[in-house]
Length: 101
Image 1 (cartoon, rainbow, N blue to C red):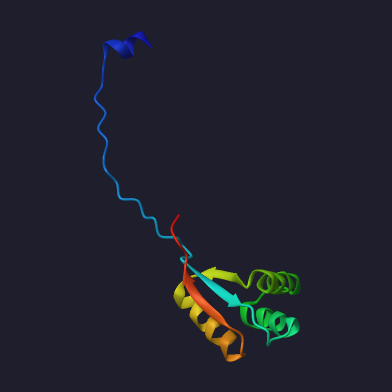
Image 2 (cartoon, rainbow, N blue to C red):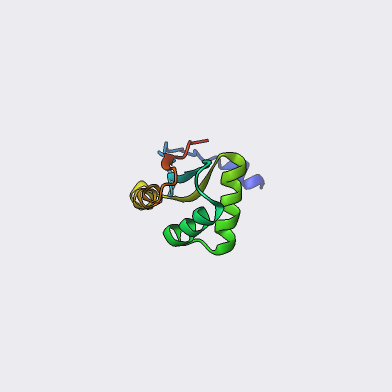
């Protein structure tokens, strides 16, 4: 260590831009309503989003209790067709940008 004190070095720092965008910047939100049954929402999540029965049941319960739930994350281009397929079945759904925090 004493050698380091006798041989000081200058360290240069470079400013670097950091990419802060998420790989999956959007969420597919499914909204609760008083019209659709649990069974229909579960069936939709399985068929449209490719969820397992257990995942779809858990999501349906969260949608019911919280009023909405993000059932899938991904790019807008990936989620928009899924959102359209869900709304075509009469279930409220939106694609929302994730907030940076």
